[in-house]
Amino acid sequence: MELRHLQYFIALAQEGSFTRAARKVNIVQSALSNSIKELEGELGSRLVERTTHKVSITETGMLFLQHARATLASLEGAVEAVRSQDGVVRGQLRLGIMQSLGSYLELAPLLKQFRSAFPMVNVSVRVQFGDTVPELVRSGEIDLSFRAITDKDQWPGIQLIPYMQDRLVAVCPSDHPLASRSSVTIETLSNEIFVDLTRDLPLRRLIDKVFAQHHLKRTTAFEVSEIRIAMQFVANGLGVAIVPSAFARSFTKSWGGVVLRISSRDGRLPAWRIAILRRTKQKRHTGTDTVDLFLAMLPDHLSH
Image (cartoon, rainbow, N blue to C red):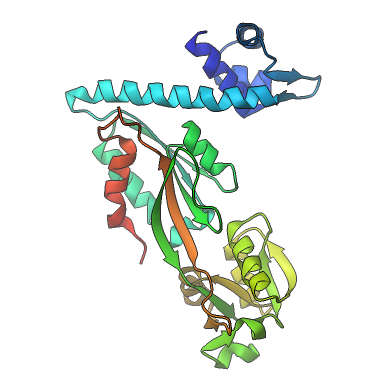
């Protein structure tokens, strides 16, 4: 088995197409197809289901994909360690971020400083959310990711670093009946018309969890994919919303409106938490890597 077999198979899994995968690794499609067949022959298992319209990875293929990604990530780490012996930091830094990270981190200035300090490191950024993020980090496809923690917070092979937590608040337009208050109960909010995010987003899941824990229902008239759009709906009197306080401050500064503390008869509400996920360091790799260097710069670029 050769290294190229792993690289080609990972590209095929990512692209879901022999044509696109071949283009990505700069070979002709027939060569890619032959390489996958060689890999399947050596393993004695079918890794890919081929149909006229699409390519899907088999269950065995998914298992092999996890190990293939981890193998390449480990090899890349070893190469970076050797190349950095002359004091010049080389390698790559692949970041996963959330759409809402800007309220808590000045990312662009941080990346500018990092690239200036380590010009031989290739930096890339991808917006990521959902349940696949921990596996992308563990497998080495992403080196570090910011992730909202709404329930599970432990994964094999993952180091979780707490980054920040923020309280949930309610926002309403300035002419809303609740605008004269400084706080509101979750029970009172349940009677309002809500502007919510779509159900696949972590903040929506957290808010749904809050209402479920209090055995309450609410009316969601509007579902949008971005907090910025939700805040515009609120500003125009279409409903109320529950968001982390950092977003609320930004909202009232840009659009006006009122921020209300949320109280509960049953105790405190859960916080909006963001953590950093990175691969657990292998004992044999004890040196400083690109993730360590990025984390060292992080405290200087927190949003206030």
